[in-house]
Amino acid sequence: MKASVLDFRRRMKDILQALDRNEAVTILHRGKKKGIVLPAGLDKQGALPIAAHPAFGIWKDRKDMGDVRAFMRKLREGRPSAV
Image (cartoon, rainbow, N blue to C red; front, side, top):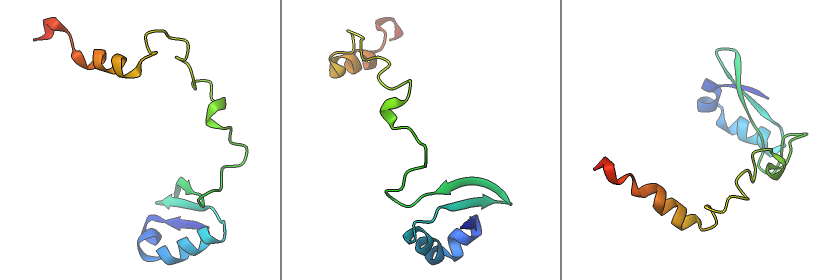
């Protein structure tokens, strides 16, 4: 289903019914595609799980980030010379 921004205001019931039918809703703004709303529980076809993303776990081997609370506390302290 394709729906404009105005349709979201005026035809929300139809959009929700399309989502109930497991239909993807394409959002248009001035005739140009802006996004897609997928039904809950339905994933994009061919999408990789987040754990497969190359950036996932990029800092897992860093020793200074072993204790997250201590690391964040140190980040929030600021510089002594900044005062």
